[in-house]
Amino acid sequence: MSLMGLFTGSRVAYLLNGLGGTTPLELGVMNNALLDVLKSEADIVPERVLVGNFMTALEMIGMYFIMGYLFDFYHYGCSVYIQ
Image (cartoon, rainbow, N blue to C red; front, side, top):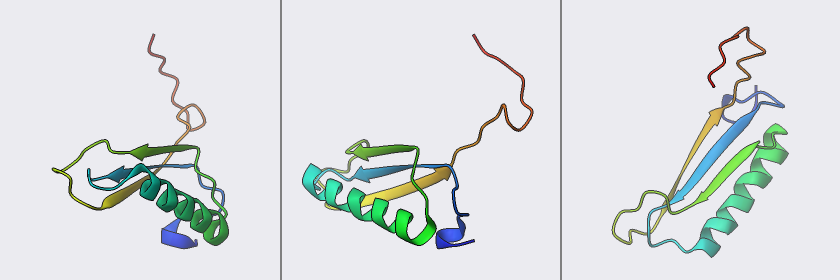
C-alpha cells in the first residue's frame, strides 16, 4: 500500500469539481498537481479524469476531489451483458 491506501498500478478515476467561484485555470493547476502526486507517490495514472464546475454553490470559492477504483467486471467473472 502507498498513498491513501492505493496499491501501485491501481485503476482509478477521479472528479475534481469547482464550487462555482474557482476559475478553470485554478482547476487546471490543481489537476496537474494531483496527477503529479499520484504518479510520484503511488505510481498511479488515472484512467478517467473529470475536471470542471459540475455542481456549484452560488459562486463559492473552492473545489473538492473524489476518487474511486475502477473494476473490470468481466475479469471478476461477471458475464451479464446489457444491450
